[in-house]
Image (tube, rainbow, N blue to C red; front, side):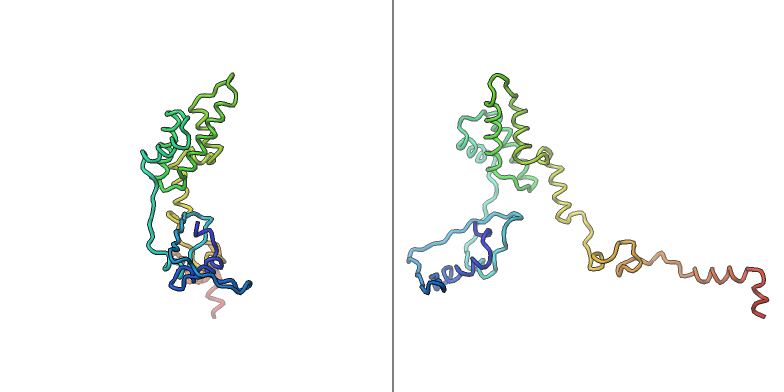
Length: 216
């Protein structure tokens, strides 16, 4: 996967991906030309653990084909291919889960579905004398493989949206140094500040006994 390589690794391949068509080793002092039929195909998945591809590399990786998640029928066929002995009921449970996660833009993949199924099938075959219900085995597998949060996809999608800033007020530079209620905060709202407080204090002093005598 291309975006699991850092920029230094990509830099060494840059001559191979443009008109020069070679790689070189400074340590060994050699240059290796690419075969005339050389082609390069790079796969990339977008997630938090990947690096950002440099622009000078992206311009060399053309054309780009985007592959979305498979449709329900295709995803079911993939699961059946890898798990031909699996029960149809558990297959449908897994596909329903995956399709809902795709619609909510969550990061669960078909590979996750295969892992869920494998765990559930092994759990059911663990002790034939004490059979486990299919639904219970599947839910246990879901929690063990993907975590308890995966049992409520809508809540998980909502938390993910908030963590990405969907419902959060953007922070300014002053927010890193001052609390929101700090009067020194550069973005503090002083609209409710009463400018007449000093005048009120002066009026209170005028009302005090002997105030006029002090002025004489």
